[in-house]
Amino acid sequence: MEKKNLDWENIGFAYHQTDKRYVSNFKNGQWDEGTLTSDPNVVLNECAGIFHYCQECFEGLKAYTTEDGSIVTFRPDQNAERMMNSAKGLEMPPFPKERFLDAVDQVVRANEDWVPPYGSGATLYIRPYMFASSPVIGVKPAEEYQFRILCTPVGPYFKGGAKPITICVSDFDRAAPHGTGCIKAGLNYAMSLHAGMAAHRNGFDENMFLDPAERKYVEETGGANFLFVTKDGELVTPKSDSILPSITRRSLIYVAEHYLGIKATERPVELAEIGEFAECGVCGTAAVVSPVGKVVDHGKEICFPSGMEKMGPVLQKLYDTLTGIQMGRIEAPEGWIRKIK
Image (cartoon, rainbow, N blue to C red; front, side, top):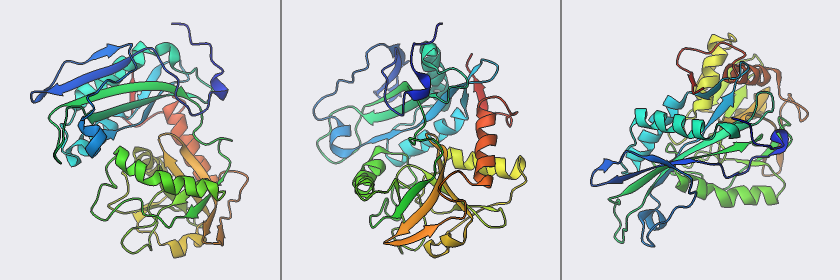
């Protein structure tokens, strides 16, 4: 197929309607066979459960054109398993792992000419999502659900690429103790929107949310996990039951230990200690790694030695190695790359 005529390097992180998407419906206790469709619209009853009780979960992953011209996805099995866990936590029927993987493959193949070319810096973002589709008026789980996958080509998540961002310590809580913070559900992101816009209005790029119980420990931003690097070069990631288990973070920890010989520790990180770190960044599917140059805690500036001009050396190595694996320049661990074409 011939690629779409897009300015791939400048498309931004925005939605572009592609040709096909996948749809499967859960009814009478089982999922139907599923199909690809050209229709991007979702038609639901006014009393559908998603509108009233927010039964919804989603995932995010990418398809890449590798150095040898192949089209691949990165660890989609992990997204399938996380979405199954999210569904269980919201009393929704999990979409089977093998069917999830097959549906992703179908969507990517059907939109092959939307997959950005190698070297453009752009990728095909894939968004599987599931929601309650049948009418519900009492507070209870719905009886019917719809699973869908859309895709859209995207550029870098943060404008300006890897330029370090400034983050503020938020007065808001992202998630409740023993709540849904570890589930990739739309309701968690809705909770972060007001806090995020408040941060932007005050000149900050993102929020640093603290643990809701003591407001003492670092958790995550509205849509990414934190990474810290000690002055001795050790990678430290915050540990908490209300942090979303990031596939990118998990992958970076593996890369640190097995590719770069960097010690990696997952532990609670106190806000009071972050000024002692040499580097700070955030990670996720959309951004991969974005450096943080400064954290502002109610007027107190915490500046990292890595500075505001570029990514610190350890995070840069992690970023280069992981993206090298994704793009086929570096050999991947077994099972990490799923070749579609």
